[in-house]
Amino acid sequence: MKLDVLYQGKSPDISIELFPPKTSDGVDVLWQQVERLCAFNPAFFSMTYGAAGSTRNLTLELVDHLKNRLGVEAMCHLTVVGQSKAEARANLDFLQAKGIYNLIALRGDPPRDQEHFTPHPDGFQYAADLVAEACQRNFFAIAVAGFPELHPDSSTLASDLHYLKKKVDAGACVIITQLFLDNAYFYAYHDAVRKAGISVPILPGILPILSAAQVRRFTQLCKATIPPQVDSILHKYEQDDHAVLQYGIELATQQCEGLLQFGCPGLHFYSLNRSRSVETVLKNLHISGQTA
Image (cartoon, rainbow, N blue to C red; front, side, top):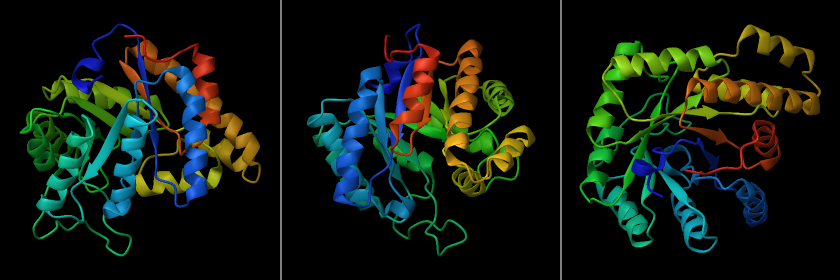
């Protein structure tokens, strides 16, 4: 189902983010995880693109496999960084030929050896440009990213919302947020987005914590906050990944309960290619998946 009609139902829809594994064995394990998660009938799986489009070809292959071999709905990540307009258009050509109509358009992170984003000399400058390009085809339904604690390169909420509105005005129909570990950030962001005149569905991005080191690394990259009460527990179980994983499931469950009560039309899980935590959270929520 296309994103622009997906979130019209009364029941929340579940979606799950994956990333391209580095090895063929990793790909085999990925399909095992997907098979387990399919039991919850997710509305779609999304596949990330890698820094500066570093996994571009594999990402395209994997979304094709998801959609056309496994028969599950797939959403492809596409970024502006590191590629020309011609390359971006070739990617859109591929996705359209394969019948993959859902995508998320992102600026993307700069390569690790670059501190700041620099547009490709022959490329699009902003995610909104990629949204507009894709919309010209009258084929794609496009999601964009939202940042409850501001984009890492933004200095003010007003600036952040300005660029978000440009993406929506260009044709984006859904906003999927960066991770957050305190729902208060999402609620405040949701209110600010609505006050800015942006009315498309906003999906909260949920990261079940797997280890203390993992969540610290992730939050540092995206400049998200680890709340004091969460940080205290991470310190307590610093060397006990099992205990942290169990806590991560409890925290994600609590977050999702609050978000569903708030009225969110869906939940987007950052699975990190591991099904256990997402499975357990969904069981805790008594959610079977897409029912719209």
